[in-house]
Image 1 (cartoon, rainbow, N blue to C red):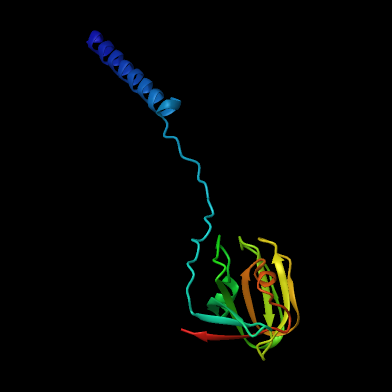
Image 2 (image 1 turned 180 degrees about the horizontal axis):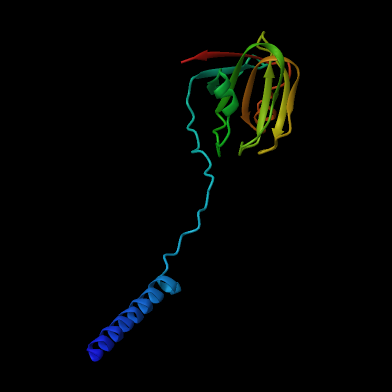
Amino acid sequence: MQKNKRKTILGIVLLVGVLTALVLIFVISPSAKVKKKPHTVTQQEPVEPVFRKDGTLKFELKNKKSKSISIEISDNDAERTQGLMYRKSMPDSCGMLFIFDEMQPLSFWMKNTHIPLDIIYIDKDFRIVSIAENTAPFSEVSIPSGKDAMYVVEVNAGFCKKNNIAEGTKISYTLN
């Protein structure tokens, strides 16, 4: 009976040893551990908006000629806040017209705007009151109108100089 008891104890010890070895192999062994992937947060830039032709804007030049561009209208807070942000290019024949409810001092910035712009401030009589030419992309510096305005047109930088558009020039626009 002693022999059987010894064999049982030896068997139990052997079984505990094997189980302990297996636990050590699978739990403590670095290769057996599940490696967690580090959690990384990436901020994606919004998808580049596609130009939406809402109408046509005409600059009435002094030589009785006019220069027309296709315009996208921004006439609510969300659209005015978005503006031309995240656009990597814009044809010279296009621009954005911002419409405000009343005459007031206005100020724009170039945050998240990839392309340099000419920012044209216009009063309630559709006359240009000031132009900020060749504004710096991504700048958060305020670009004030200097005078009360009710409309703003953004076009590619150099557009005003190239087309002889200056303070006092009148505009008109039609919607599609």
